Image (tube, rainbow, N blue to C red; front, side, top):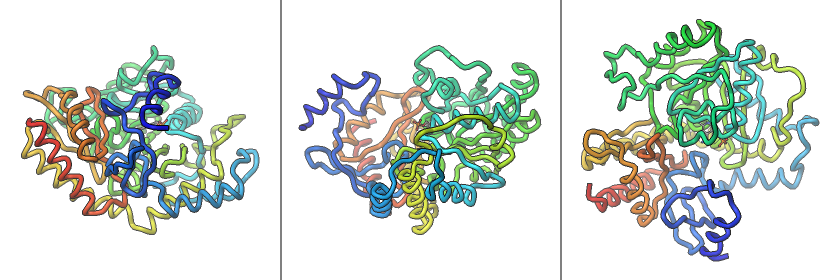
Length: 426
Ligand code: PMP
């Protein structure tokens, strides 16, 4: 098919909510490493990685090789029969994750991983109330959508009772109009006031992303999660860390929550864990995990091929020291973005950690500027650079190259961004 045919069929046969980036969508044909190629053979430097999912480069030989071998050995059998890839991956997760986290449940997506986490917390604590953050994103099932704190991603009326949201730690636009550190972390302390006023005084869980992804890489102050964890535990709840975007080295540590020196009670994973193979995982301590009894199944959960893809991805991350590379390349990227902020007033804030960096674009008086993001997207496309967007007002650029990105690729991306901002003339 040529580009026109793909676009026509996309319009005709897919739900119209399956939205694409760019005025004229980019039809992707193939990809390798940090580069993506369109149907006409044009090469793009990919600094979004299929929405924070390509951890070790597109079509990584080690991951693809492992997938190919496993596909011809055993592709599917379901969890009714134990398999080696399934238990090996579960054992690996237990070894890598912090604290007493030990037992996993595998699914196909981040939405399901969060569903599983909340269900588990409710069963374990025998409570229903769950707290999440405004500007958070948890997925597209009814429960995950109800946990999500963005009107634009909540397509139907709230379906799930017992879910509450508190203001997030968004220092660039403090929801309380305060300034860090004199704010004394009012946003975290507000959780206690909320529990005391809108619940019976006991909660099942608090779920949050260590750095908010779709929210626009909103990064809390370093003591924020400690404060939150203390309150959650005081009221009998479990702390769920959604590592769907921050996991597997993205922030310069293996897991985002480790940046905040906290041991969560439950962690959820998806996206970058298997470099693009569809996977979700929920891990908890044996005591918490074993409180889920009775019949529940995910047909494809722990599928031998996706489990193998995850094992191979994790092996590449470990063997090639990619967490450290993410930290170092993240520093280089951040320094370059900070320089761009000095040069272009449209960049109001630079934030994030490691290879998870965001630029919030604004007009006068910090007014969100989604139009600037739209224009920057078209300009960077012409420069053959792929970036992502996010933020409640769609005014944040998200930059997340593969963890094995090189210095030269970082410098190349910074040059392309610089040229694009210069052309925008703001
Ligand atoms: N949690 C976070 C933090 C996410 O970013 C996403 C997806 N963007 C999800 C959960 C849901 O994952 P999925 O799209 O795989 O269901």
